[in-house]
Length: 387
Image (tube, rainbow, N blue to C red; front, side, top):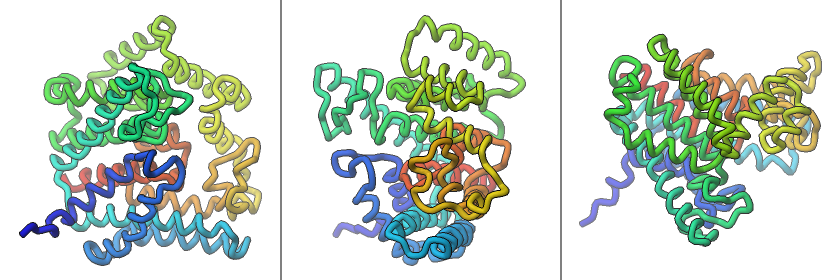
């Protein structure tokens, strides 16, 4: 008789949760709210009670953040038709709590097991990307089984792989690879050398780099530049600087559009002028200008800064700041940061924070891959203190 219960082990549930939140099968799930993910997230309370019914930091700070956010909104605006947004947020929080408890309390992963999970995701993204490229090359732009959905932005080196769009894939894979580097560091007891990484993990590194280039996202190149900072240790300073100079010098010769976009938006961002950023790259401006506007325009003397202006208030506003602040208020945002720092980020001065600012514009909203990155960051933090 087949023992089905072994397929529902706590480790398998944690693995499935992370992987399912890391991919988007567009033909089934669509581009917006994924019904399969909503269905899975809706049963997470049952899984929590059945598998890991414990009070953890994620439970305490996640509940505080949600109660404060919803409470302040109801007091100010009453029970609006957009209350469903808060229920949707609750589902993401519950899913995160399930994963966090399984990792921290049930201790479902060892370092080698989680490294194996990282490899699975990176290889899966690469395989799907290569299949998409092959079909695109022979003139087929629609093949739902491999997430090829005839998008207008498609070209041979600009495809979405297992994500909604290329930029999502770039952010997510960068966080996965950062987790890989940190776990190797914890496993070895010191920062791994480039020579050691190339010797032992050459195939994974090549696969990761090919995928980041193949998805054709400017965001992916920014993420790669951030990952280079990991090796900015004393013994690697010269090598990293040489690589950076070489790449920067070759950009005009390479003439690769995503790389050109990344450099142009970097130059525009350094100006600090949102108009220049918008003129340079209107697509990237939505993310970059949010950072600049939040830094330049956050007015702590206004009550709406602290208590928010309501859901969707940020939608059609010029000079929009981080939506979590403009919509729900700085008080709510502070509680959100408390959740992130207590459960996910190791320190204020770390690559996690640089990624959070530059790749995610200070915020993780109601989107699955964003919460997957929080799960990864929480796992890194777990192994830092338990390796």
